[in-house]
Amino acid sequence: MDYQLMLDSLPLLWHGALLTLELFAIAMVLSTVLAVPLAIARVQPAWWLRWPVEAFSQVFRGTPLLVQIFIVYYGLAQLEFVRDSWAWPYLRKAYWCAVITLTLNTAAYLVHILRGAIEAVPAGEVEAAQAFGFSFWARYRCVVLPRAILLALPSYGNEAIKTIKRTSLASAITLAELTGVANTLVSRTFAPYEIFITAGLIYLGFAFAANYLVRLLERRMSRHLGPVPRPVVAAGGPD
Image 1 (tube, rainbow, N blue to C red):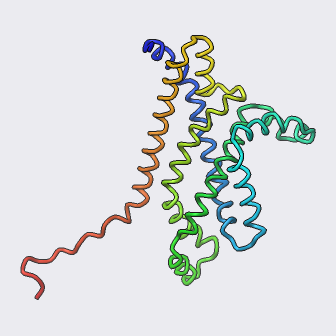
Image 2: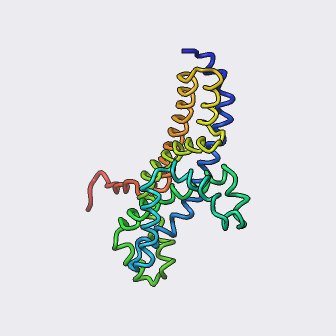
Image 3: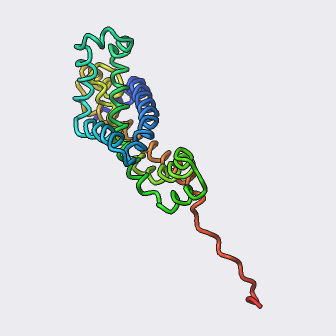
């Protein structure tokens, strides 16, 4: 094992890791913003709201992310109306194709997570909000979503870690993120073990950091659910 090569490769790998973090952050923010209204639509009784969201979730959860990336990057360019649209300056670039695909794929999983969390909110809390005269959106904003987000945080953390690892597939469309830089270094040094082990350790560090941040957020959001302090009884007992 060439440890010196591992150390020498760190600056270049870290440069690719910054792009990995950028793809991850943008995909998580956009997918969360997209998943919240879709999850709300998914739990509504109206079929015309539920079915399109379920179809979206099933398609993106049921097909490989690499295939989705290839369809967006290579497939959309074959459509003339796409090339003539305002979106073409973005869709012609590998960066935005990766962002769009990661966002849609992650949103499909987050919709499934948030749907379960919303359905797990105690019915009594929702009924209490209705009894106080809360409107539909006020119930979700003040009661349902805060509780559902707390319930969904552990699964959300797992999805964040998976998204970090999914960004490695962006190297398939020429993006020089962490895995892409590692592939380039391997082709130059012919030392796959040292390079890929170093890249794997960086991914592992990102996963530990994401897990720590989610746990920290979970503790902060649930601090009001801590044990109720027991009343102090005087030594002489009650009169």
